[in-house]
Image 1: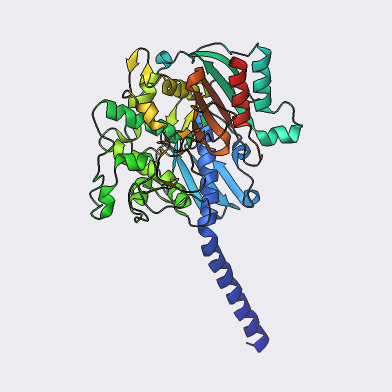
Image 2 (image 1 turned 45 degrees about the vertical axis):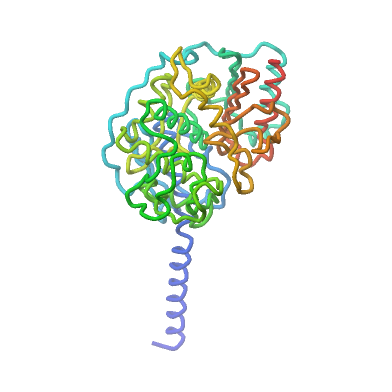
Length: 446
C-alpha cells in the first residue's frame, strides 16, 4: 500500500472516530429531541386523537432532522435522527398515555373509569361570550388584533372563564373544542398539591412525614413531604433543558423517574433553599402513590370525585405518575380544577381537602429562593412575595396560579370569584398575554 493510500486510510479512520465521538458527545441532547418527539407523537395520537404532532414541536435546530413514526396500530411512536440515530420509542399504556422505554412497559393497574357526572361543566353547550367587554378580553387573549404570523406565534388554543361557579365564556382555536384534551405541563404540579391534600384529609399521610425512602440513610432522611411539595428538599437539581441536565435525563432517559431523582445528592439542607425542580414533584408522586394504586391513584382520588372524565395523568415506564409535567385534560376539566381550588376543596357539598389547605398551599415560601421562583408556594404560584409585595399589579393581590410551559395557566382570583383558564402553544412569542387577558376578564366581570 502506498504512503498516499495509507495516509488516506488514516484520515478516514480519524474522521470516523471523530464522528462517532461527536455523536456520543451529542447523544444526550439528541435523545432529548427524539424522546420529546416520540412522546409527543404518541400522546397526541393516544390521548388527544390528533395526527398533527409536528405542530407541537418547538423551534429547534434538530427539528428538520427528527423523524417520527406512529405505529399502524397506534400503540407506539418512534423518534429518531434521520430514521437512524438516537432512536426512542414511546409506548401506549392504556389509560395512562404513553411512556418512553426500550420495550413496552410492564402491566400497570387497570385505569379506573371516570364519568363526568360530578363535573357541572362537561355537558354544557358551547358558552360563547355575549358581553362586549368579555368578547374583547377573549379576543385579546387570542390575538385578534395581531397579524396572522404573530397570532400563530401567540398560539392560544383555549380560554374558559368561570364566575361564581358558572361557566360564563369560552373560546377555542380551529381544530380544538371543549372536549379536546390538552397538555398542562407544570400545571400538573398544582394538581399534585390537590392529590396530597386528599391524602392528608383522609389521614393517610402528614406533610411532616420524613424517612420517605429506605435507601435514604443519610441526611436525605430528613426530607419531608412538605419539602418535596414546596421544592425545598435540597436535592441537587438543574431545571435547564440542556445537554445532560437532570431534567432532560429524567424525562427522556430514565424508565423509573422517581428513583433517578431520589439518587441525587443533597446540595442544601432540607427546608433552607427553594429551587424550582420538576424532579421534586415527580419524586413526591413516587412516594405518595406507593401502595396506593400507583398510576391509578390520581384517577381514584381526584379525577373521579371531580368528574374529570377527560383527564389523563401519564406514567413512566415503572408505572409512577409523572406528576410534574404530564397531565392532559380538556379546557373545561382544567377550569374545574381551578374552581375546586377556589371552593377551597369542597365539591358537590363534600369537603375533599383539609380546611385551610388552599390558603396554606398558596402562601409563598418564606426561605431563600432561587432567582425566578419568587411567589412559588406549594405547587401553586402566588401573586405576592413572602414579604407581601405584589408581583403583578395587573391582577388582585390574592390571585394565584397553576402555571405550565408554553403559556398554560389557571388564574384563580378568590376576591372576585373568578377562574380563567388559558391553554396554548407559545414557544416563541415574547408576550403570551396570559396575565393581560386574565386582567381584562377580571375587569369585564367587576
